Length: 279
Image (cartoon, rainbow, N blue to C red; front, top):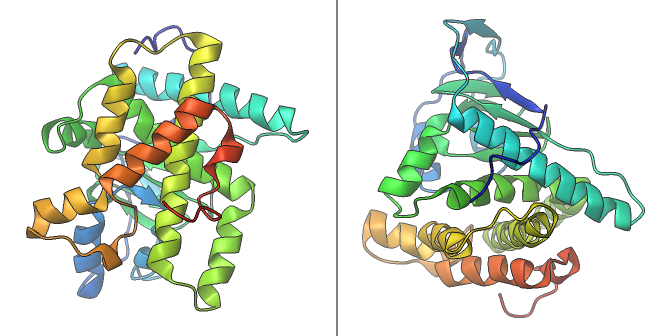
């Protein structure tokens, strides 16, 4: 991936070297849930993070200064590309794109959805419109999931930004309403996640048309990352068998298919997973 010439976003906050002054305890069921969430990366963990004591202080205190590095530059470049891409998409639709902030942290930090832990993997919090990433996850993506490469990492960022797009479009609010009316939470979550994969594909296609950053093998690298974090692949790895009814992000084939759909079309209107009869 030729990312070095991409415009850098100013919406990146580096919290490495910061630590929460007091983080609410997560024990019992909450601790087990966080272990499970470590298998996935995705959208809004607030339902899980409600285990955190709401009265706990979540202020940050400095414990050192983290020097900028290549990952910081990379995150700013990819986020800048998503801003340019979605800015153009929203403008074409007669609207204005409001970009999210991206927080890079190490270990633990605070979010409007509760305490954020590196064990949870990257996620988007709709309450504060922030993408949270501990870039140690990129090493995990390469070593554990067998999906190395900068474009695979960019796919992770683009997927989380896809959730922000959903938030701006009111999709998350509608999904919350469906859940409150008794909708199947897991099935709705799968459609949310697959749509974010499709939106990541849209970014890849349109962003490359704008800046020509894709190199041979990059798209395959992103699809390999998508497949590696499919629910079936993760369940086989963690427990040796698959329980489709428990899926929350979609199977490997589904994640690859929807990313590819967005990439092939470059059109977000093709990403309506909620109307799709077959995922």
